[in-house]
Length: 359
Image 1: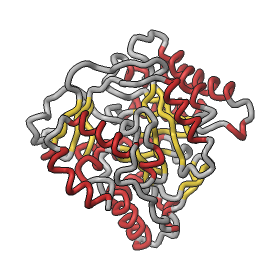
Image 2: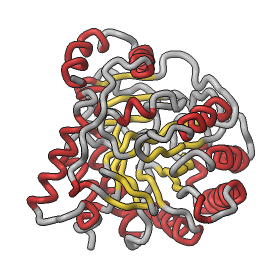
Image 3: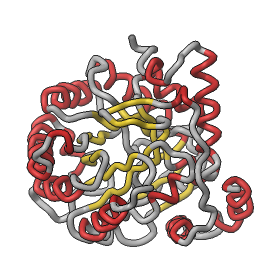
Image 4: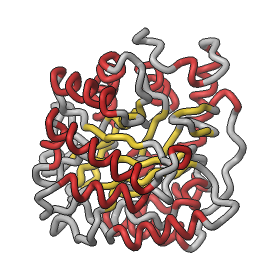
């Protein structure tokens, strides 16, 4: 049903401004259009990461549900985890003007949103309401960022982490969006070391009982060189954080891009990001010696893509942009094909394939 509805709607949706089209999709999900319950997952896809049990390793990346409005509806697509956000402490509109562009020929998107957010109060209220439901499905992450004008960036991350700790299954500090001035500079060794220390303290203060502390991850970008990746790996291992997400959108513009929109400013996501983000993941797995779980993100559009991320070192995989071009039925296809690939290579569980190309 999801595939049919999307095929019928896509000719009209592609004529609408991409940001308005996205908003229409959110509103449709809020009011139940196309909603369904996902089928049970193949047992080969079940995995345990960060001390959490996932029915499958395929997740929805941050950016789709920025305000935590349609978490349960998107679980109906078949995801094993949903990441809401990025949320900032105070509401902010993000960057002005047109800020989302489809590159249809490239199956890619460029965005320059700049952390448009309704703020922590509304975000955490939705997560809190959901926590009250005994039937709420799946693993939910909260992705937190900083307000544009905040000078002490770590202070904003402290606020965000503390606020979502009681309601999120895991937390992500996003230091790699290219659309907030100065944000990516937080990935340098000294700033990220200080930021992670303060973020962990904020989480621990909000959840004094270690048994109730959600895992804390850092999301880093694909535009880092080998030295920067090595620095982040060393800091991550020493800090005590629970994992990493590799990566985010890129400022790079591969020469293979065909769309007339390819020169728009902002972060590029989608198919052209698959190879560079997977190479970044591969290096991070190597530098962390496989001791820190990694979520692979960037360019995933098939079961083969997800499998490549997993073999390169990803314990879990996220996607978003591919849904724009293939619709929500893509999730079931990815899971089916991933299960077939795992079995064809003799793996009984997805965890057995993590990092096999690097071991």
